[in-house]
Amino acid sequence: MMSLFPIPEPFVHYLAQYHGTRDYFECHEIMEEYWKEKKEAAYEGSWLVLIRIAVMQYHARRGNGSGALKLLAKADSEIEPDRMDELGLDGRQLKRMLGQRRDRWIDADCVVYDDFNLPIADPALLEAAVRKTETLGAIWLSPGVTADANVVHRHLVRDRTEVVVAREVSIRSRQKERSSEMTD
Image 1: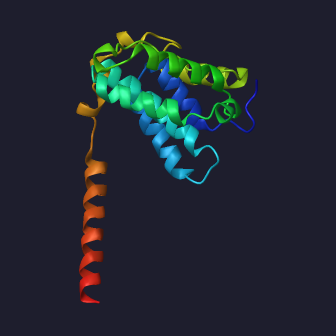
Image 2: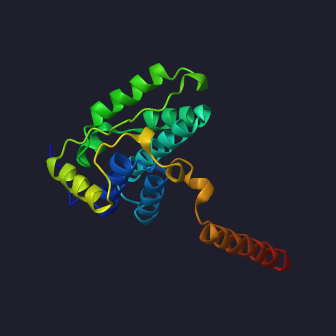
């Protein structure tokens, strides 16, 4: 199976991080940035499902069973297999995998981390992702249980300066809007 359009570089980078470094937080960051740029795109829902799968893995590995379950349920209910096929994944297989995981993870206590490798159907996509993994200094399909603690607990050690500043700007903007509405 081949994807329908040129493969977006952020998608390749996501796959390399997902299957190589197993840095699921970074996967989330990469795909979220791309999704925000391409919000009106036909694949918006697919990018969101991929974000949810990465964050599901992040929560499962950190022992947050309830968070992992919520994201699994959303990804499973939102996935569009035909769209995933168009991106170069095996959408029906991915849908089956999500369903099988839901069958195993019946409650938060049943959530156990394991590698959840995405079924890549497009040989060109697979080749590009493996190459990108090598440029990251990682090994394709390396086990996620061997990930460094900084990767496992990324949200605790990352630099949040940009997020904090953006939040403050947004708050000030809303406050300014409200005050101008009151004076009008």
